[in-house]
Length: 222
Length: 166
Image (cartoon, rainbow over all chains, first blue to last red; front, side):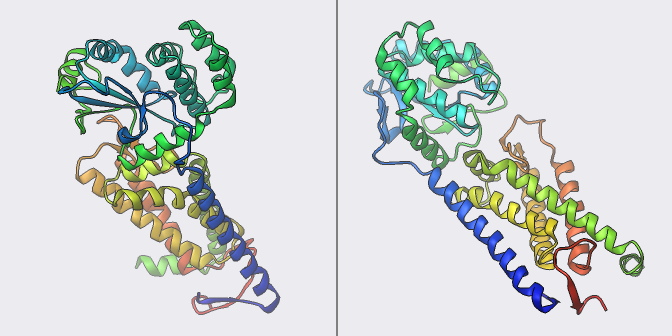
């Protein structure tokens, strides 16, 4: 610094600089540790750590392509993607033509975490796909306060989940640590957009393969 | 000569007022840009990764650190404390951003700069590289001005002597 301050101001100046630096370091540390996953997180059924903590369908079917689907429940383009390709993916799962891994990311904010947690609760009831589909069909506006426990339980009820276990799971957010694990694994896998679809580890072509029913079906056939 | 004209303006009647305006603009933009990102660290990390320049782990670290750093610089500039240093760091940041956006453009990536939140891969045709670069270039010029003429109106720090300003 080529500038200098008069005597009394100097202390205050350095104090302010020090405080700002402290805020930056402490804030960044909080963000860092807040986004770190946990090895002791409760994990929903059909989740595989080896598959980036994703919810896996057809884990044991041999010789089929692996389709990784990265989504955020609040992302409007994901709702469009589901409307176009949801049936194709469900069919591939039912006919055991592909191993499909759903990665429920949460980069759009807290309501994404609530939705991802509820989807995990639905997975425990073997209703992940139905919940997923119904949620996207009724996707509320982003971070508008609409995605809360009441809404998520009504989506569950709409697809026939009426257990007290599900309700408690949604209320308690018991899988929110797992949601962080999914996010951390997605970050390590260099997923930079939602939806992102990888077939056998290779990302589909964003220009041609994402929003065309035939092209998508062909792409996930491996 | 343009530098002579700038010098004349900076040391003239309105120089320190322009300095104040520069401080508030650069500081305000940095503060807003940081603030809009600190609550969604995963998204911010995604935005940095999408430039495809840094190793993933370093990009993930920067995605968390950078928003807080921007907030810090913004506060110092708005208060008018350590103006020269903050302007230097802010200007350097803008140069890095311009380089990062330019390489993304040149390589034909389709990303959002993620400057004010958002970021990541976008549909081809939805990129705004030119306006992003022009905005950052304008901010870099303000930073340069503040670095050269850090004496401004209503700064919390009262500078009494400076090598730069007699």
